[in-house]
Amino acid sequence: MSVQRIRSSLRSPLHALVFLTAVLAGAGSAQAQPADAAYAQGKVLFLSAVPACAVCHTLKDANTEGAIGPVLDELKPDAARVAQALRNGLGSMPSYRATLTDAQIAALARYVSKASGGAP
Ligand code: HEC
Image (cartoon, rainbow, N blue to C red):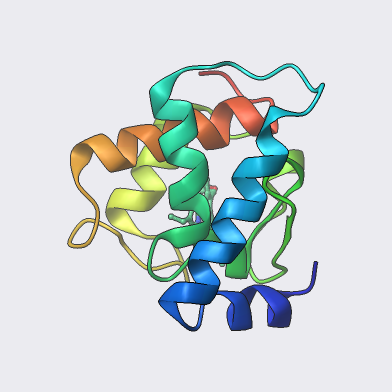
């Protein structure tokens, strides 16, 4: 899926909803996934945080192909590293301290670390 497609999918709330519903519908596939609430919330936030991680990052589990930031499947960041990048920002990545709650940051850290193969 291209960045353009993700951008246009997220442009209106209705399209974003349709997009997220499609993503979540695919989540119950045969692929083994941890069924915990933070992981599920993190997956939704990966696509819906403003600006969406999906725009800049490739993560196979989320079907995203953003190319501005590192490929998360290759970086395999642990949860603490994800949380730190979200709180403080890094290079051209913005800080999410003002827009995400601690619980949302923790959910994203859990999802990104697990889905990419990093330490939880
Ligand atoms: C505007 C583009 C952009 C967005 C949006 C963005 N990132 Fe990033 N991200 C980057 C860039 C660029 C880097 C590399 C920064 C550097 O190393 O200088 C990065 C680095 C990272 C890293 C690695 C941190 C490290 O210690 O090396 C993680 C993890 C990460 N991003 C997760 C996320 C998550 C999760 C979101 C959504 C909440 C997100 N990013 C949103 C551009 C973005």
